[in-house]
Amino acid sequence: MALPAHDRTMRNIGLGLYLVGQLVGGTLLVILFGLRILTEEGVLGGMCIGAAFALPAGLMYLTVPRLLDRYDPEPWYALVGCFLWGAIAACGFSVLVNELIGSAGGDAMAAVVSAPITEELWKGIGVAGVFFFLRREFDGVVDGIIYATFTALGFAMFENIIYYGNASQEGMLGVTFLMRGVLFPWGHPVYTAMIGIGFGLARETEKGWVRWTAPILGYLGAVMLHAIWNGTATIADEVEQGAALFLCMLPVWFLFVLAFIIVIVVLVRRRGKIIRAHLVDEVALGHLAQWEVDLTCKAFGVFQARMRWGRKGAEFVRATARLALSKWHAGRAHRQQMHTVSMDFIVPLRERIRTLRAELHQQQTARR
Image (cartoon, rainbow, N blue to C red; front, side, top):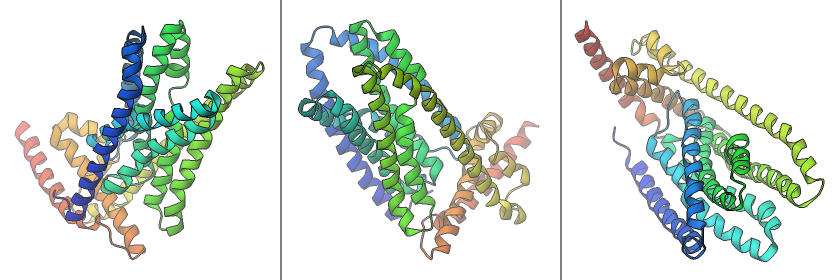
């Protein structure tokens, strides 16, 4: 289905800015780490060990947000773009600033002040890029969390390569992997998810002031959580009683992560209810059968349709979910007396669903 000219223009602008950011960030990483790898003995081997531990774990963690994003899965190019932005551009710019701050104000200043402000800013820019330039792929809070999580996991994976590489040279690889890879792999995703929630609220709201303030408050929340965690870890390293404080923070952190996961599950279920509510009239008009709506609203409806009918089955479920969400956006825009491109997709989506239904029916008849 062809995109409107405005959407194509915005995507092209976004792609250009994305490539520039990746090029500059990647160059910074090469300069800051490439020289070290070439000049310092043992660094290359340590980085290879770090990559061997960080890459498989990072890819495994990506399955979690994909499972949550089950009703209307985000396009692979947007998710890969977010992941690579976090791993390259966000890391490159953040490392530069943190190195400068660390040289001037010390490691504690870099960890507690510079890292939260800088890292969440550059990760947040990745989420903002999807919000502004791929707006049709950004429906609300759940999408904001998904894109933020992919960006943060890319950042965390690269960061873990460095930490694991340094730890392997110091004989601390096991402890470091336990802390960063097993006990606390969701630090960066939780921080940056606050930004995703902020942009998600801005996408869903019908209030102008929320549209502007929610992303800012989300960023401030991400910075605060990041600073609290880094501050606690820094105190644990530098003060005698710091270890006790760190141990006291552990159950609090685990409870926070648990509460965060529960909130995500509730939001995902809410999206399913939104999709179902906006397909009721499609059943009444005869465009869809009730069992097709039920399939679309199932936890793993896309997977089930793919197993039953192949690629076209998955496309049918995605198109049905997209129709419901387009109607949701159009309804909000109508109430605000605003125009939305989502309105332009409703009729073409209905036509596509009608075509897919006929093809799937023929496919099922041929099997009998």
